[in-house]
Image (cartoon, rainbow, N blue to C red; front, side, top):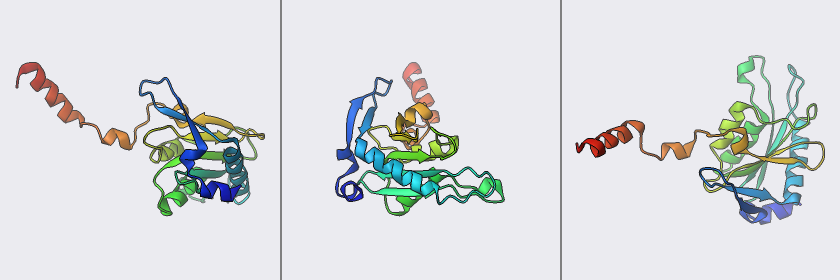
Amino acid sequence: MSEFVRRESARSLLRLSRNQTVEQQDRPLIDSEVQRELLVRARIAATKAYVPYSEFPVGAAVLAADGSIHTGCNVENASYGLTICAERVAATGAVSSGHREIVAVAVSAPRVPRTTPCGACRQFLNEFRPGNSDMVVILDDRETGEPVFLEELLPQAFGPRNLDSVPLADASSLRRRQNHGG
């Protein structure tokens, strides 16, 4: 299966359906074999977690736009704020390999089924969401996985697309000029 994922682009492994949100963003439906492969890799990654304090291992596997899969596990630190989550480890692995779009992520926490990414990870993943579609987040339900969308977990997210718009100061001065002829 992993050879298949490497040969095919992630876009060809996803089918797009329309999401009826304000932005009409595409919501991809992931191929069941790819979903299974991501879950297997996330489960394996969880076995490598360094969690001496919480004893709560988490593994993640991200699917980059070219079809490559990158894994990560949570790594705790005695200075709790320096702990890094599995999703961010996997995403930074993809980014450090040159990828800038993540189309899907699987998350596995052996102690609690259907564990979702924390808020920081949701925001971090949003940075690498494809420009024309949502990101699939596969929650480990101990069976075949439950796909949800990043938009559901992080509604109205702030991200790179927000920085492409007109700055607020410029927009307000533009409105003043339009309304008052100035």
